[in-house]
Image 1 (cartoon, rainbow, N blue to C red):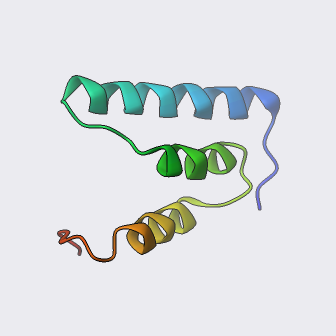
Image 2: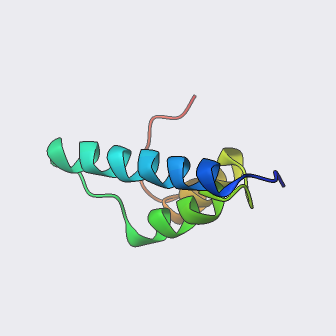
Image 3: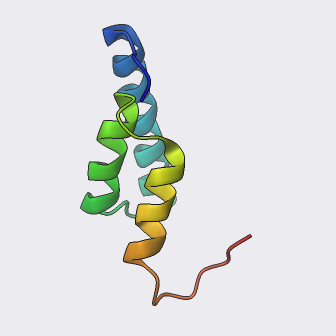
Amino acid sequence: MTTLTEQDIQRNLRDVAHAIAQQELEGLTVTVATVADLSPCCAGEIDTDEVIRNVYRRVQNVSLLRQ
């Protein structure tokens, strides 16, 4: 996918950690599987579209609001 610098990867990981913390402050939990998908995304190994597809596959039997 995309070649990122170590600084880019660390920034992305920090941003994901902040997003997860925000979800926890709102009383929500990010699943381990979703966090596992986000790690390679932070490194540029997969894109966010793939993360979203993976999440939808895992929750396909759960009623979600989709666009």
